[in-house]
Image 1 (cartoon, rainbow, N blue to C red):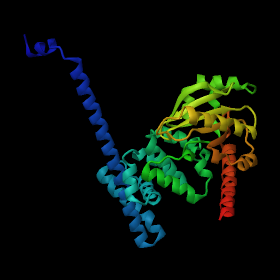
Image 2 (spheres, rainbow, N blue to C red):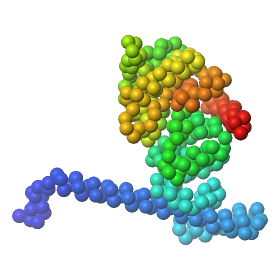
Image 3 (cartoon, rainbow, N blue to C red):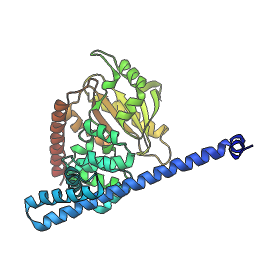
Image 4 (cartoon, one colour):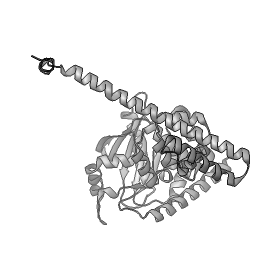
Length: 353
């Protein structure tokens, strides 16, 4: 019998095969992460070096000249990856992320392809939001792209805050992994995947959400886990039913969701407060934070919501859209809402001083 035949008849235990396969896959993943992080930091250092050279020369045209010359030299010696457009992107990378320490931290989770999606964004807060959420929730490149296209930042409550407050919340996220509710809740929620027609009942909306629960959870965001539908709450001799109950792992809170077909009404606050207090008393576990409420409505009445000071009660109100919105109109609506909210918050803070 040949050596080859001897090897072929030896039975390899399943356990060792699985263990070795796991080692190889784990090692490949680790190597890939190290290589990606190394490339990202290299590109940042190249961008920083070009940036300092251009600033030192103090001549606008010199930037174009140095990039063109450097691109020719590097491409000749190292091949693709150092074209003019690539070097220009590296310079932009160093400009938009000026602190090497932050880049080093982000590069442990974000590859160069992630940064390429984030760098073109015009607003500093936008870039920081997507970078930090990507790091925290380990988004794929495709997910980053989808989140930007769906205007997640503009739909998140933090975008509607004054810049200093928004920066403080993002700093807490970066330095302490402290996720604030304003980084979790969105407005509006885009539920075009439910396939609802023009006329439907609250039960139809709830049934559609449960049919498409996986997609709905993606729209809610990372960290949500489904707990129950029509959750029964018994107070005295009365029965109440909460439409949907979720738990958010990072916030360590129960999230009560109430679905409404029409515009927001002031009485919804009292109903949700009742649910939240009951959940805090009977369902909140040691180590958890107080439950939060999310009222999803077809429309909002901004002045009523402002006067009711819902944030103080842990209640968030958001619109939902069941049809695919026109991107331009949605952007205009969101930007207008952001400006109005910021102005109201600044006015409120000014009156408290």
